[in-house]
Image 1 (cartoon, one colour):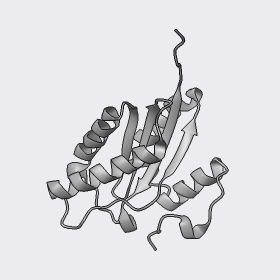
Image 2 (image 1 turned 180 degrees about the vertical axis):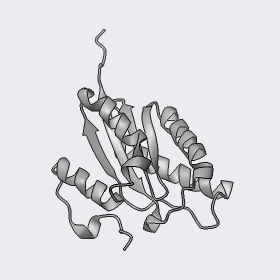
Image 3 (image 1 turned 120 degrees about the horizontal axis):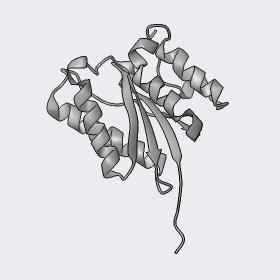
Length: 153
């Protein structure tokens, strides 16, 4: 019987509604663990997760049956409910509509993991807007400004 063999690496980026800095150091690790559990329950493998108070990066090794849109929808829905139930913030927590998803080859796995895990250092030198627009340009993804995240002015 023939098997299915794959290596599919996907990097997701999404932001808190209105780019509010709601993800606090006191509970971000719990958020990352909860998110990792969602991904494992969906039979995907988390390679790296990290972020900033206003956005998150996930780098996964996915199965061929994975639908990125369905996975992100489930992550956002479940984490929205969980964060609000835990009362981690005095504000209603919600992820902003939309997300970025970028595919990577096997040769770049270690560099993407390093990039994700060093988010806090990386953002000492570059804003989220600069980072995200850089991804869109690097991956040659056409976009319209009105469909991008709402940027903090």
